[in-house]
Length: 144
Picture 1 (cartoon, rainbow, N blue to C red):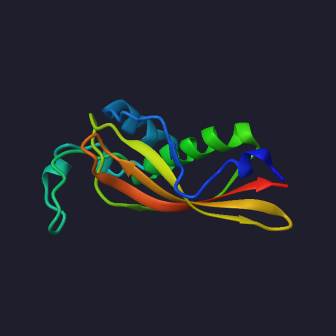
Picture 2: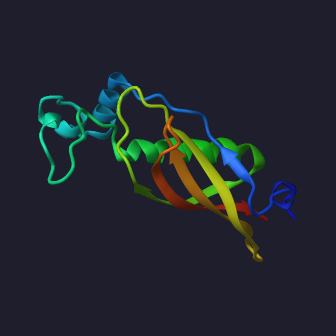
């Protein structure tokens, strides 16, 4: 049995590295993703109202949360021989330049099969105020 898997327990928490989005990092993500939506670039545009929502300034791409979560998972898994298999996220609150977001994961289930050891995780990304900006679920494998 995989020694790393044997040491895991339900309720165990994995914490990622805080991320500090800036105007520059948001711009770089626009360039890398080819997503130049004015939500991420144009302060004048963002002064407007989007139905009942008003952001009051540019916001980080939601997919950048996905990357912050993926980094946390791979930083934890790969040194132990684990593999990131699935990730689903929901964006809850906008992230703006100057915020600090920190991903964490809580082990919710452990299962062994003939082909591998599986770990289900509940995912949360909180900002510096403790507000969840993204939530989700992940599935990882420790191969046999």
